[in-house]
Length: 474
Image (cartoon, rainbow, N blue to C red; front, side, top):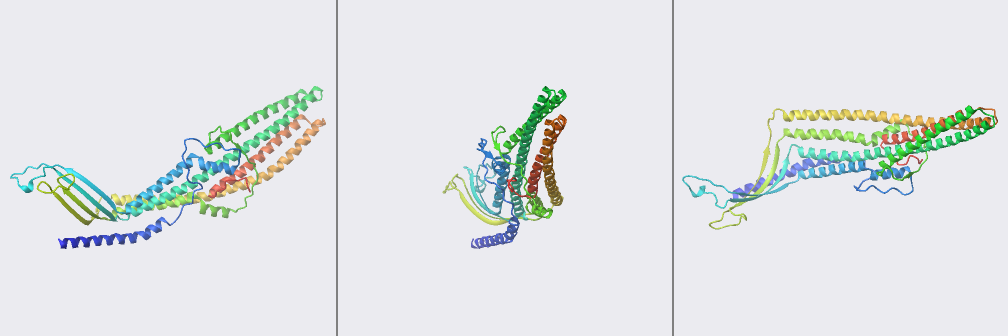
C-alpha cells in the first residue's frame, strides 16, 4: 500500500509539472497574440434599449447635436453594440477552457444476476448499488486548439468593437448628409418664395400697364404662366424639405412627424489637406481596414484550430468514487456495503488516420486565409480610390461655389437692369421674366454647390475614418 501511494504521489507530481510547463510555454504566445493590437474605441457606449422613443429636443437643433442624438438613440447602433457584448462574453467563456474542470456524478443501479451454482461473490446487492464520484480534470495539451479558439474569439471581439466604430462613422455620415439635404431644400424653398414674389410683382406691374394700354395681353399671360410654374416648384421643394425632415427624425430615433426644428447655414469651410495626408489618415484610422486585418488573423486561428487534429490530446485528472448499497452510502454492518477509491492519472487520445479529414480541412482553412489576404489588399486599393474621388469632389464643389457666387451677383444685377428698363418702357416683359429665371437658377446652383461641398467633405472625413460632428463650424 505504501508503495502504491508513493507511485500515485510521484505521477501526480509529474502531471503537475507538465501542466506548469505547458502554462509557461503557452502564456507568452497567449499574451503576444491577444494584446498585439487594440481596436479603435467606439464614440459612444452604454446604449440602453427603451420601449419608448426618446423625447424630441427642445429648441433649435444644430448639426453636432443631431449627430450626438443619433449616436445615442438609433436602434441599429444599439444592435451593433449588443453584438460586441456577445462576442466579448464568448471570449471570456472560452477563457474558462484553460482552467481545470470539476464534475460530480451520482447513480443508482439495480441488477439481477442468476448464476449456477450460486456463490457469495456472485450475489448482487439486494438493495441495489449507489455511487457518487468527483473528478477534477485539467487539459494539458490539445494540439494548441484551446489557444487558437480563444485567440479567434478574442480577435472576433476586437472585430465587433471596430464594427461599432465603423457603424458610428457611417451613421454620422448619414445624419450629416440628410441634415445638409434639409438645409439645401430649405434654401431652395426660400429662393423659390423670393422668385415667386418677384414674379407676382412683375405680374402686378404688367397688369397695370395692360390696363392703361401700354402692354399687350400676351405679357400678362406670360407673367401668369411663370407665376404658376414658380408655385408648383415651391410646392415640390417644400415637399422635399419635409421628406428630408422626416428622414432626419428617423435617424435620430424619433417618430417621423416629430416637431423638430433644425438650424444651420450652408457656409464654406476651407479644407487644405493634400491627397497624401488624406491617404495616410485613412490607412491609419479606417476601421474597415483594421477589420480586414483582423479577418486575416481570425482565419489563421481557425486554421490552427483545424491543425490541432494532427496532435494528440492529453488531459490530467484526479477522481474519487464512493459506492454503497444505500442512498447515503453510509450503511455499515452485516447489511451494509461501502467502498471508497481514488486515482490520479493522465489520458491521451490520438486520431491516427481519418481518411484525409483533417488534411483537407486544413487545406480548406488555408485557402480561406489566402482569400482574406486578397480581400484585404483589394480593400486597401479601394480605400485609396475612395479617398481620392471624394477629395476631388470637394475640390470640384469648392470651384463651383466661386463660380456660382459670381453668377448670383451678375444675375441679380441683370434682373435689376431688366426690371428698370421695363418700368421705363424700354425693355420687354420677356427680358424681366428671363432675368428672374436666370437669377433663380443661379441661386439654386450656389445652394447646390455649397451643399455638395459640405456633403463631399462629410464623406471625405468618413473615408479617412475621422469623426467631425459639426461640418458647419470652421
